[in-house]
Length: 313
Ligand code: RIB
Image (cartoon, rainbow, N blue to C red; front, side, top):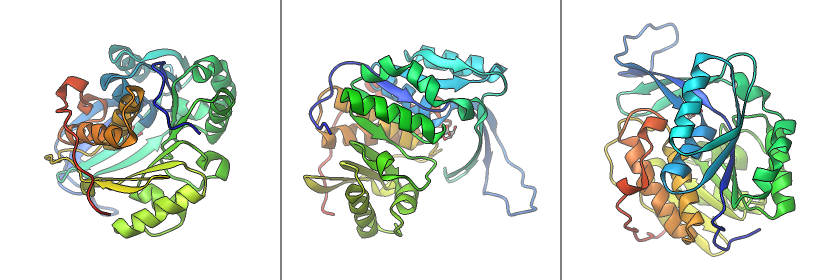
């Protein structure tokens, strides 16, 4: 596994594209309750597309591999990728609907997300193999879990054979085989870390224990995001904690995706993992201060570029 600075080549993102149907509500309804919300909006989203757009807006060159449907949402989702400068030659079209996410955002900014995979569910190992050249020629492979796991297996195989480092964000979380956990960078939040490590993650010491368990399971570097408590880096050099950047929380959707975009852009520029994580946290702080997934992801010029000091763990 490689921990040297990434080459200036493109980043390959294999993942999902969703249209997000977003309803803002004062609080989440109880079962059987009808609740009056206030704003409704459609926003381009999907973890794969969000991460691709975040990488691009924050400075990386990006090629995406994925699948859209043949509906009206597909047109806007493809246009948004293109506008961000993401190459979408390997985002294929399937008959039927594109992926959608129904997102409820409470007034405190917390969200609840339900997905229908649509075309994301038909992305196959063969589709990934068709883009093998783009993965093998990449500086880094970035994957999540909103497309079938056979796609990850196929992409990881190509990347490993070509010596391309892998950043894996196993979201939505599910139990993973050691093969899928043996990556260069594993990026998880508390919920994902708890489910995958099989340990409770309710405070920072528990988060560190879960991250160490994920390292023992094969991940070289674990980046564990802790929401308002910042992020942990656990790697061969030890454990560091970085506090979150101050922000006003409007909508947490795509915060994790933006964090990943910042980490990837930083690594591609030759930053240390610690500086790249701080870049990711600065970008995520802006994302949570704005509504929506892709509309909230900042451009690089919006970031202050100031590193923060690691605190004790
Ligand atoms: O990570 C946020 C994303 O999760 C949303 O954009 C939604 O589409 C779901 O995939």
